[in-house]
Image (cartoon, rainbow, N blue to C red; front, side, top):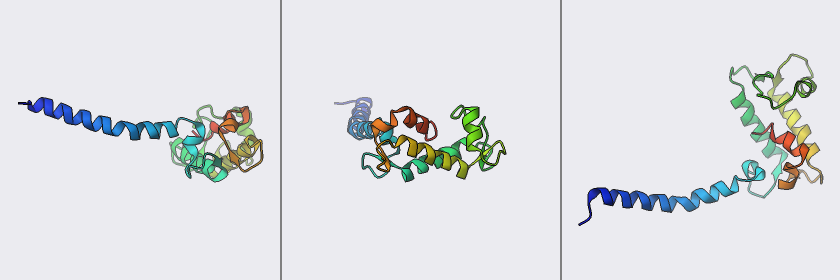
Length: 136
């Protein structure tokens, strides 16, 4: 006769084994930079997907919930020089619109083949890495 403890252990093992393929598949998809931002699963990231990821990050970084990011809230994602260039009104903060304008600028710079999308290769260029710092 099987003990209750052994039956529970066998059941939990069965659940863990059944869940592993789904978890591994999800992890594999998100293991590339494209996979992290590619919401329509077409293998590339378009400007809309990049802006969606950037807007979500902006909201997480805006710890004081004032609708702007200062240099401290950006946690090193931009140098002082980059920050100053992205701050056209010189108020020492970036609004969400200013942040997304910078994302668009960096997206276009990273899109070396000018097809309106970024693939994994383009994310691994210096300009792609500069964009990535604004998305995650």
